[in-house]
Length: 89
Image (tube, rainbow, N blue to C red):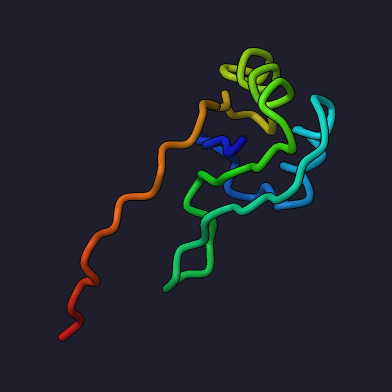
């Protein structure tokens, strides 16, 4: 199950996020989205849980919970929409 995690602290690492979600089950993959230009976190990411039950439990328990001074926004990730690449002139 793929989860969207928003309102992350900008100093949170993939390892930090994995540790938070491992309390609810096996985590297959963690990806905090980084800004291409600055290299800083964009404040959101994705966590892939091994099974749906663990993912649902994580959503129920972690949505709104404070982690590193920020209240997380956690829900099931929607499929990525294909968008045309932006032109850089």
